[in-house]
Length: 249
Image (cartoon, rainbow, N blue to C red):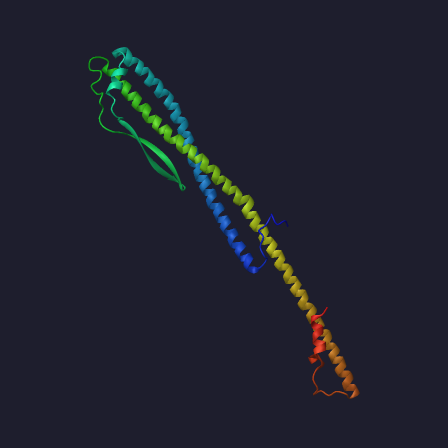
């Protein structure tokens, strides 16, 4: 197993516990990010649908507004210079607020009326109906423009956030979690190998102890048979030279 495929850690029980906790955290984070990406994608598609509908409506409204402007100019003449001279401040203004979607702040624009209509007496002499229609059509056009600007700004913001979130989800799913799993597999393999080595070592020690015990029993019986040793004398296993054999191959 290559060192690039796993995290470089010393195989131990503590390292295994830490890796298991990291794996659980990565899986939980992957689940949460996946849900966030799904929620953002759902909102993204709704905004895209509304943008298409608004643009379709926008074409019709702008066509109607342009036609009503032509009607008003035909009925009253050119009134552009009069409007430009009387403009002091904007009556239709736009304010911004935030909409939170799965932790992402989306800008939302809305228009509001500041002050009264300074041109409400315009058209008293002639063309009043056409001018009133013109103002209503362009007011609707401005409202749709503000809505479209809000939708497109949210669309661009969501598009960028969805890309970042999907990159994180893919990184956790295809890089981080596999590396942690491979690290856990490496630690488990190393610990199992140590347990096998320890079991083999203890087994060899037991075999050597049994051999030494058998040899001591034979020596004891031989000496007792020759009358050189009694049962009260110490066991040959207490001999330092014999016990040293337990720790040699």
